[in-house]
Length: 617
Image 1 (cartoon, rainbow, N blue to C red):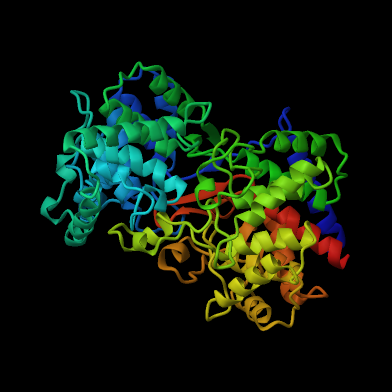
Image 2 (cartoon, rainbow, N blue to C red):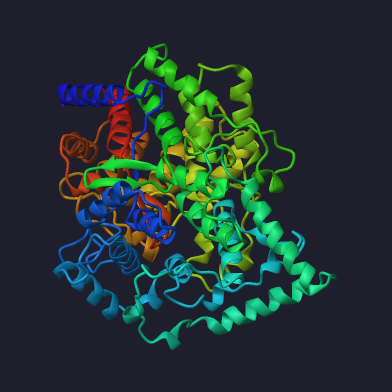
């Protein structure tokens, strides 16, 4: 066992060291479903962009991930296919002109869409795309008056009650929907045969109208001529988007928000040859990466996240902090620290900037998880001021309830959870979560030397214990799902000095042991995120096995049979490549967007095996 673990650690170290880029970063692919590839094709065809090479690459990727039954899935065990993903990919392939829509698998895709209720049963963002291309009418719930953007923050609901990643999608969608804008020309496919029972557009239409009435009531309190008010609202929306463009031209570094922004700017009268639009489309094309199934457009890149995690994992595995690769990584990470004020300051006005964002192009939106990851990686390798500012920023972002969220402090207006959008509570707001709170606690305890005597730590410990599930697990928002949350919570509690005999820790560890697979590993389905209850995958994945092991290693003083069996499975998984190593264990939008981080098959096993070695061998 000892030699096997050491050899596996060495293999992982070599793999990662050999893949480091010259600037010190690691650039693994952030792979998701077909949405971004399909939308890129649809946008290029809508604007008559002649880049046929890119369209061909994306067509090939979409075809390579199509199932034999004609559908597209977001994850392996989504056995019946995913309606929205299938609509998006089918539309893009037809629009590309390179695929025969009467081919066997395309006919199957069309039948699946019809049998699933047609276009109108798609996810909300898919409906927006269909509206922008003239395939369906703009949905009622998307027809919020543009004057909404003028409501002050003192209103019961305003734009800045939504979390940042939601705001940058909402604003361009509002602009386009208020213009009833769409692009449809002679080459645009007609999907009307997939439009089934359109009169059933909105089961929630009555609630939508009720909320719209309430918002309009607030708008009427603004004393100004209606025509001027509307014009000013459109201007505010335009200014909002332009002020949040990254230097590369993306809106907040996301492909999806940039896609919607291009249509919004066109609705406002911009030419497709305007420098802003040209820059945005150029930047979207640079988000391409190579996968086993072909070339894929990433929604954002994960460069900073991967680089920070890998550097920390290598150091944990015994690579000297003065190793040239570690020093280059530290220089890269330090260069990405953000010293400007972003929207996060609105609910945190006394804080000084000093956080990090997720991608290599992110300069406006730091987040707590990336900041703690960066600080772990550069501990002892940076000036006291840089470290202190990062730590102070993390502490300043603690929510009033004691937990931590990902992006913005106290961004948890309950009213938004009532909006007639699926999973509104997880899409529009940014509440405290077990994964963020646990990982932040782990950082504070292990790397900032703050124990449970510190008020911030004490409040976070209380939040975690209070929010434990009845079965002993914790739900993780940004990973799949209960294994992820339970690992983060246990690791955080133990780092904060909470005894392994504490009831919450005991129950959490017992739950992890209870869901171990027969092969020794752990695996959890993305259905857990959708159903908000644990759903086993019936197979083990490297990252989820590593998370569960890491939590148990933090609890047990000696290696148990459960741990050793898990280690054996993890070592085996490192040397194989199949659907379990590609399974998405990152979470984005519940039921709509899941992430296969190409780096995760290396990072988390390396960390877990290193923790095992450092504690037991």
